Picture 1 (cartoon, one colour):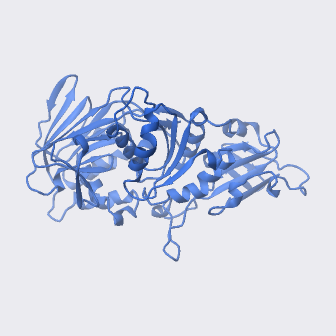
Picture 2: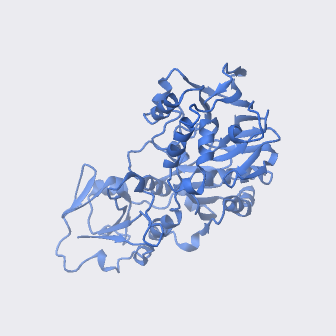
Picture 3: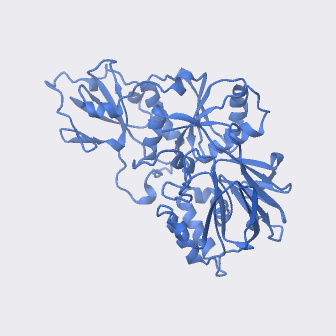
Length: 482
């Protein structure tokens, strides 16, 4: 016997799954449904659940005869720009694309149970003294709140991780994550507390956490790295795609939830980007320029100048963010095919540090200079194929002043398993560090902007940026991965 339920927004049924629910056992049924499990699909009657949609299976009664399968309802066929981004209802409010599905059964095939049955809370959650759920309301296309209400909260309840075991924080501004870290994590880490943050955000939430931990109070000898679990609700989600095993799962959310339940924490490699004294952090769509504490910004994904940094900066507006990761393509077209006919030539001196040597690149004008610790900037955008998960190795991708079609071909090739590296015009090196000196003239920041994990830094005329990887043991956080 099996029953399936699609849980609507903030369903009380999802928050109290018990076997008192008639769905658990229908007395009119004379025999269990005839389940089959083959080729990645659990089937009964005219219904099926595919492996890629399953989150976990709970033993509802604590015995052997009653199970609840938790899965996400597969997204219906839709126009590409509509998938996973939510659509607006008649009143202009964004509808959530998430639907939690619970299926109750008395008997399930052993092969299915072996693959998905929940075995208890992972060690990192059992050991934690403080657990926080941090919901970044501004991340991506604004779906983090809906994901918590409709998916994560019911799931935590179902695995007996009750509300009293964690605190929930919803961000109110771009500074909220740093404020949360400053007032909640920093002291606890220095006091040696085991702390866990389940963060519903993109890369920005993790990077803000890192910077506040490293730029705040002096680290004590008793410091214990907070453990972060990312449920990827950002735009590109570079960290998530790069730190986890390659997956054929169509849903990044399924992979994130499975990682929450079964993953293991590992220290996250971090780089340190040091800037010249006149550099400023640019926010508020570039309208606000703020001095940088100690002229240092920390990152875990990318430090770039040229096409990448300009693209990220120009697309980081309220209007463009409505388009999710498609905003990058919209802005790239303007940058590669400007009205004056040619992409901008970025005037910089670029030095690579390798094996104790300083190598100055011959070219004085550049199109793209990007240093990264990760393989993927998006799920399919493999910028650095040789980068491995949690590898503390910096690699640089760079090319000169290509025309619009040539640069576009390079970017498209990166979506083909990193085949842009076959292009002889593209450089790719593993380095100890990189230094960029800016020779663009004028007061405008536009062509002297750098991107550090999505944050934009404007550098003064004649200024510089230097990037180095922190040594092992200097990391700020652990990240849970599969």
